Image (cartoon, rainbow, N blue to C red):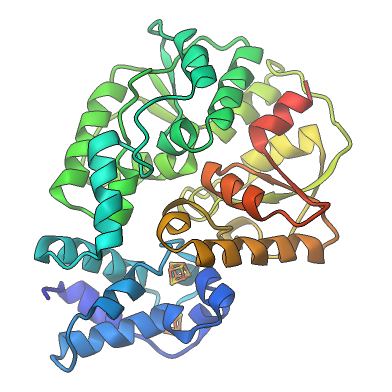
Length: 363
Ligand code: SF4
Ligand code: SF4
């Protein structure tokens, strides 16, 4: 298997600090050493030296990483351990070594633009989108996760902007952002093409409001890497925080005590931690879990909920334990996929609400 010199350097740079063992949400949930970036690097180092084959087991291990970059923040090498993981995903795709369960999801994304293979929009969402078919300067990019997995979240996002009197477009045939292919097979031609097609559509608007942090991260990082231009980008949370600050959304504090689950894409990759907190603090009493802001822990969902549902469930349950440990019974999240995962695993007497639901309840 081909591996770039940079990846080889990262694979062999481990200084055995064990930070990745302490902070990996997958490793902590499964209790398995193999889920650390150190273990992943060790097996790839053996492959690079010709001492081992790139077996199906090693490929499974490559897809046991959520790419959340918690280890990147604390790795003693100063390198990013997800760099080689992403490169191996690409190389495996080129060499025909991608696991079948990943190829099945890739096929769905190529055919339908979403990881679930859903072709039809939910009726309520279709009606909500239809009311915003006219071309405006602002486009609300809902993203595939909300459109096809949690359509109520997409409807509520639309309602929040409507409540503020914002004029905006939502596309009935919104293109895939490419984030899913990027996660699944890295910088393959198919990923770049999907991103280029999406950028061509979004370039028609002055401002792009990205509802899902997964898409926002792709717009900022990968689109920049591939020199794809779109209108000015705002995350949904930064945009809504601005509406509240400017008095366009008149929310009242509901008095509800909550903790906020930082999506890792927002907190670590886009360095946005205070805007969602401004929204939550305006609508409720905000408390904090341990491991918040850039130290946040992934709370499950998305790809792994499809092909490794037990791991996703265990990860979500760990985050519920974190909430319980600070006496919280309600988690607010700004991630569509984490919302779905937390909802499916909520212990009795505990609730998850999305940030758009919280805003609507405070109007
Ligand atoms: S990126 Fe996240 S899931 Fe992957 S090894 Fe690092 S901490 Fe674990
Ligand atoms: S955090 Fe980095 S240096 Fe530390 S054990 Fe993990 S891979 Fe090695």
